[in-house]
Length: 361
Image (cartoon, rainbow, N blue to C red):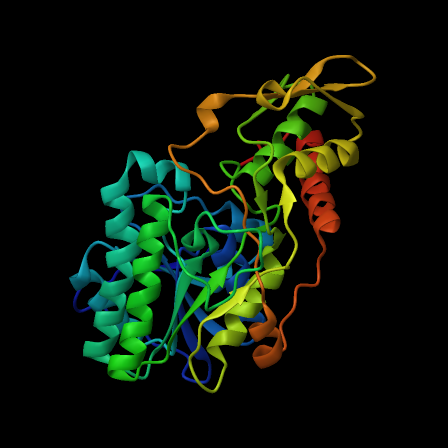
């Protein structure tokens, strides 16, 4: 089992000084798990930050087979004294701040907590680095949601922000304060503006994984329908494994710089669902008008997908597509997995789990 460390004063342990040391906040999430796996393969010592008050969900680390290789340490983004103790205790070479209240919909219900965790959490870490050791490298997980409702063009590092949720606003603050600490104090601090990146480790709260997991449950006879919000919202969807490689490359750069990571393609929720259903073995027929559209299975004539207005948000973003030319030029990064292959990877994973009777998380 993985080892756990308490950040309380006076706790001492020995580190392997031959390895780079990385602290990853949000290590139990999709990106944190994949990033930890990548860093372990590059001979890092990994400390994974977790909230003491939260129930730990370690299934992603277990699924990747790396749980035993990670040291878990209690870490609270809302408490600066705790952050300082952890950084002094570990003395990391690199800090990857992936932790956040990461659901756009939830940010409308909990805007203050979202801001405290996402915006001020990043500031607390940066200020701790400034006070303790300015040689620590810092990565901030920014988001394409910061761009908001843009025109249908590829967005890059110079595109303007127009955030349309508390989540997006909080991410803009985290992004800008990272730039400020880089420029004001000479800290190696960079942000990755990542467009949507998915995988079998994505939470079922996110629409892509909701689609693949629900269709798998329908096929297994445990659910009847898949309910979605805006079928026509378009996103730039890539593979999370590709994107965490880009994150790591940013931190190995000679100088800190912010980069967009994206595929450069935009696909609708309806398109994702249609391909996923076909891959799962369903033959969809879409019926009805755009405001009340639904899909039936051609073979059974049963409704498989229908619209539910409760999944609409007070303000939303209808189109996002990124331009990763700078990352390709400077970092040699480009996405390897294409859209249809991504859908297939996610469908086959959930189908396999569902057939084994596993709970789809």
